[in-house]
Image (tube, rainbow, N blue to C red):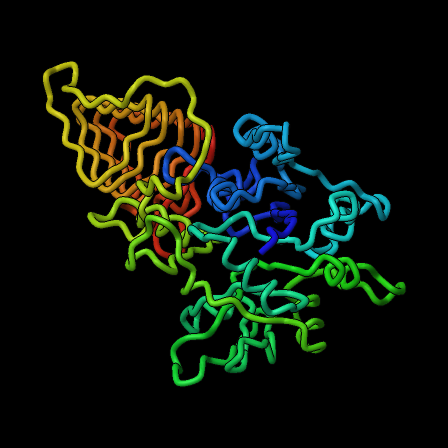
Length: 407
């Protein structure tokens, strides 16, 4: 079988309003994750491991930190024409931002025509998962269809936030419901729906034709809202069962793991998945690594405090350059350059790079953005009403302290 020529388009231009304040000064795909990574690293790593190495990342809102991360981290050898490049809104239709995901592709259609690929992978940038995309591409080519949509079962309540697929026994999509308040459940399973993951493999000509407007009132602007329903109506859409995707080095427990981190609570929960005793998502898979940049930082250090106080660290990730000195850290993610001083307690929390937890401070169920200095003896995460007066508190009670907050 001749290897297909594949172009990857990663959609990274959404505002991420449900992630505020973490997205107040950065795009959602640039939000730190798991201490050492950015959210976009997981999608890009899947393509790097699959050796699909011609990747454009379509950016828009608050894109500086994302652009910088891509340019400093994601550099392939150019000898064979490989690249990962951020592409800002080029406004080819005039002074307009992207009107939706399909419009983003249309405004960058020259990237497709210049590359002349056989298929185009259009994937989201803000999900946590491992996937061997080659298997989905091969399935798409074998079935000679217009678009293949990756899907996974989710609960009925979760499905209201996704596109939901109805398919026949042969995998043909019969109906597509975008963010329906009453989504159809799976046959024989009243508790779950088959949800689109927002990952698509398109036949190139099909994609160009469907995103190109034919008249003033005939423009499809959104993939889930317009493109997939239109191709479904034409009988040219198929579903790909992500649960059958076989990733090297992955055990059965992790198979089919996928998390949409579109809200503070889903983001927090996905981070906490990493630090469970037997994690359902394993960062330590050498056969399918998650790539990112690693700054020149000294090793993480756990020591006694200045007065000889011992440290206690359990069930946590400690990143390079962090120091825990006579403190208590439990079930938490400690990012690069974080300092946790003596008699401080950090539990069930995520500390972004550069956070300083002063002596005697208490932090519980918090996400603390970059470069925040917690004063001595402060207590965050114990009094919801008091916390909500100053900070964002999620539905599940996670306190979010914004970047650079001054106490």
